[in-house]
Image (cartoon, rainbow, N blue to C red):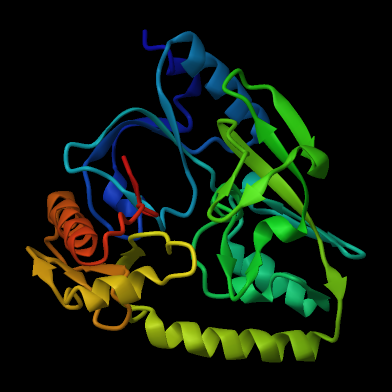
Length: 292
């Protein structure tokens, strides 16, 4: 009997990971789980730990590249009502880690609360945005974060207050296995004015991002004071293609993949970009895309 037999209702084997990532490619996960409740998640984490099975947490899949050979161990996908709820009380907004960041931004705006509108158009979930301190237009999620609830690799749940949290560019010290939720303290403002600012920011971002029907992901973090897309463009790589993977002709920091693209195509293109930018600008680009 397998260690996960008690969880057969929401754990399955050999799950195609292409179904769960924006790049829509890569191999299968050895085990894949969608626990319906936080208690089920805690039990699963404890059991996997006792079986010495490695765990990866999947949110929206917007910054994940799964290798062609697949993923060993257990992938836990935080999806469903238990992980996607958003609640608003006065100036405080609490969002589950599985909630889409875009939903958090839009619901806060509709409630007349300002502070998150600069994050409009950033894909992914609240959990991923907290871990990587999502930022844009001079604002970041960490500035508004009041506390975060996390789960350790032992299945224990801890609420971490603001005094324990550290946010910097593209990073946070939320390094526990699972981020369960975050609470954000925002400022009251006229919903119409927040919406107007948000629309202006969104128009600019939409011009840069690939078309909505395309499979894409952002490759690199921006070096301090610089734009990764501009560095890649200056290296003459905009539109460069390997196999069925291509650098966007809108913003060179976006990777676009067509049907038939492989993770190997993407990795070769990433390595080419890093090498060319290093040679030309003496800057080593840091991956924003997480490779599994």
